[in-house]
Amino acid sequence: TKYGVSAEELVRVNQGQLVWSWFMAALVLARQWAQSLTGTRAMMETGPAGSSQPLPGGPALPPVPILPGPPSAPAQLEPGFISFFSGLVARIKSNEDYDVTDGQLLGIEGAEMPVPSGPTTTPQVTGEITSSGEPELTCKKGVFQGYTVWLTRPSQPRKQIGFSSSRHFLVGEPLPAAGTAEIWIFEVQYRYQNEPFGQVSQQLSLTVRG
Image (cartoon, rainbow, N blue to C red; front, side, top):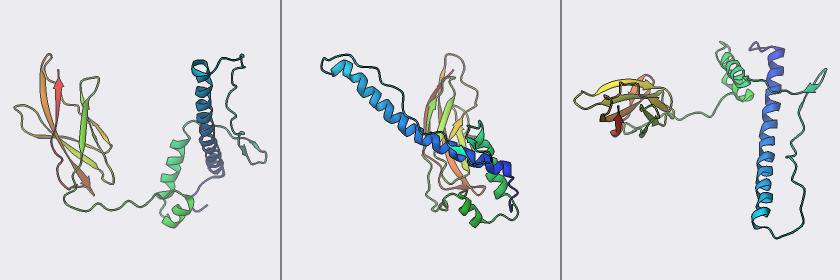
């Protein structure tokens, strides 16, 4: 009531929890069945000669969970449930009366992330060339907002080409002329609380072809 969660939304959350738990249990049994299936198949390759046997049946899955009534009914999978649930959590947390203690009781407060410290913090960046020929950088985000990216191309000054708020950053710069190759040099630096944080990474060189 405090956060305006409707009875219908509560039913959807309850059903989503039951269905998710069913899948977790079913996956364990399915993996065990797959392992036993592989072992049974190996009898054709390494087993001693013997009489024919029936093929194994499918895995014994857990019973379908039941939503309490009235009326009670089998729980069903709701496509897009995670998006709905994420939106519900965001709505609760944005409520002007939100209390972190409530969030802890509801299980929507994650573990507290430590504040980064030390001016020597240096991001580690790697990269590869995608199938389209564009470089893609990868850098662990951690507790930071993301990282700023700089590029130096042959005969061009170093320039800032973007900011990534996710682990990966696809470089959208124009490729070299067809049939030619260039060595592109990348550097990144973390951002925290809207300010640059720590040191600039070591240079990463990638050969980019046109």
